Length: 538
Image 1 (cartoon, rainbow, N blue to C red):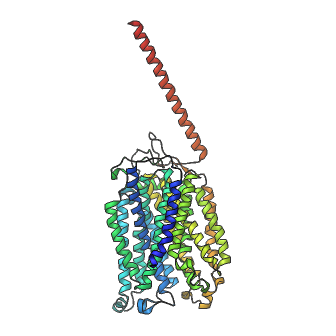
Image 2 (spheres, rainbow, N blue to C red; image 1 turned 30 degrees about the vertical axis):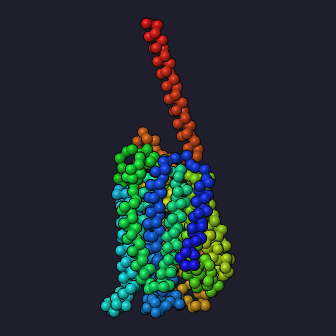
Image 3 (tube, helix red, strand yellow; image 1 turned 120 degrees about the vertical axis):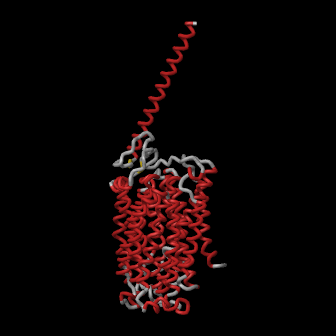
């Protein structure tokens, strides 16, 4: 059986099982026409695939690093690039790229809200395609470039700006996707739909690690950038012809989403007003801080897990590390669906409890990690940690951001939250690149191969997990409150409520409805009296 098919079968199996579970779940109260659901499904499937292929062109550097820094690097295949990309250099390149992403996602967010997610996703796809092409051309012509420049244009000199350029355009991806989906899904649907969407995004991890792994195992390392570049160009064209910003732009009535800006018929606030409104919202800032921890943990796990697996002899041939892309994808799918189902069906579309539960899992598995660094259970523990952190990231960056930001301001809210996540990634890349065992630090092979010397890894992850858990508990009851249609929007309003205030609003609305019914009854009595008078007069 071909390797690609063999690795896809578990992913397809999980998707089928989850599809059956979703089909058997009771429907939420929001109903749509079959035509609307079909068009919406087409929209988010291709949104998800585009973002998945952005991952393909983002984490390819991590896979190339594991090949070029390996003692088994095939000189005949990869030439003099073998040994160039050490852990230390990779940490610096990725750390700078993450800082660029974190800053850019905030700066680009207003463009997304102004021009729409479709246009900014097009910018992201074509820009990332060009950046990957430039990195591919550099690696492919490495010897000629070194000869022409006298060795001054080294790999790190070239890759710091090129990877930073890639990350700048990659930053358009998350904000664009959340912006588009915020107009197509009601708050009560977003948990489950966000889970399905997260499953598609998790395919990006499969593409990034397993496809790129197969590419560098059989082709020159430059093709790990050439091929993602070509696919991203195709997705740029798909975005033009398939994706639409809202139901109205696809020929359907506009959807009342029930989020923070639902019913807000006032003029669009200025960028400064929106930023002020969001950064003074304690819930959004708390979510952003949680996402800083999530970004730190996520890249602390996913960027360095394979490095540990390849350097500690007992893990050589371990199923989890040999199939890391497939394992990450399956974990992401399970995480997204678990998070989405319990958010919508157990916690009534609250996102905080889900984050707290998943952070609790991270805490347990991180403690276990201290004891399994030197035995086969390391791979299982590692996969469980990936499941938890992907679930948190999807629930907060992908769902809570559109809830509390609202469809009008989803881009900026996502930009701030995702920006914090990538600042966490940058911190993780720098610290772990500095402290984890590596040849670039001058560590002896025996030192790197000893599992005990990797105990610094869970020690560096643990503080972020504890902080993230505490902050998640603080937003346990946070839930969005939509505006009433006749309410004049205020720039300093915080659209947050808890269950008690929601119940009060419900009672107030009931009283208002009763008053309207009494008025109608009085009017009907008056009309009957007038009719009787008219009859008696006749």
